[in-house]
Image (cartoon, rainbow, N blue to C red; front, top):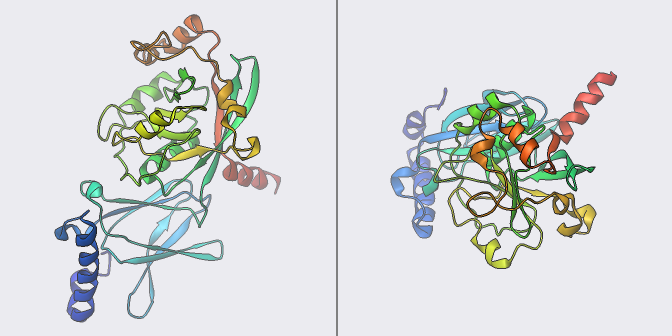
Length: 328
């Protein structure tokens, strides 16, 4: 791909290329997830979620030489390439070279290709949301650890929305104790109208078991994820935890950091959000369809005055970087 044509590589190294094809094929046949014809080429989207730009290199399998594929801007910059299983890429994250090897295409990725997040070796990206609690009478903050490898498309979309201020002032419109809290219908009418139709593909499920404090997208069918997400509430029954994830769009992409609460979700701010109960027809809480209307937030203020809101959300590392730059 780019200046390095796979066809030319096969002509120069027929045995090596044949082996690189057969070995992944045997692996794929053994796990039964991908058909042989889907080994490549396929689209790979690289997302740089670091605060700074990086240059992505392809490493030649024979001599290890590095060939630039492009520079990817930080904070969500994207580079689209066509690749094959086994292709190896590297990038420099402030003096620490990180590597990425392209894995075989999964069945769930046939139509969309792969999404790979460049995070410099970080296990998670910390997002902090300042929020009201106890019906707007107090303020607190919630740290959300975005796990980029759990659900890459979902993680990238959430970080994009955070950076764009979409969740600032967002209502916690569906708070059901022992079940979930749902939010993501933005306070700005134009923005929420656009995002309502801006869908992302489902991520391949990794079999991650839901727990209290985990975040996933709400949806209405395959590839229906937009901006609405839910947080699993404290004391959710095990039966419900096991049911989460049975829909294709319900893959966890983040978790609330419960470390400072001794891993007890009941002591965290998410347990202090005012609950009006489930949405119609299952309860008497706010109606999402009415929130999406132009006067949706006036409706919330009028009918649900004790509703809690996210004041603002930001990527912690990026805010620190910006504050440091201002002091220079």
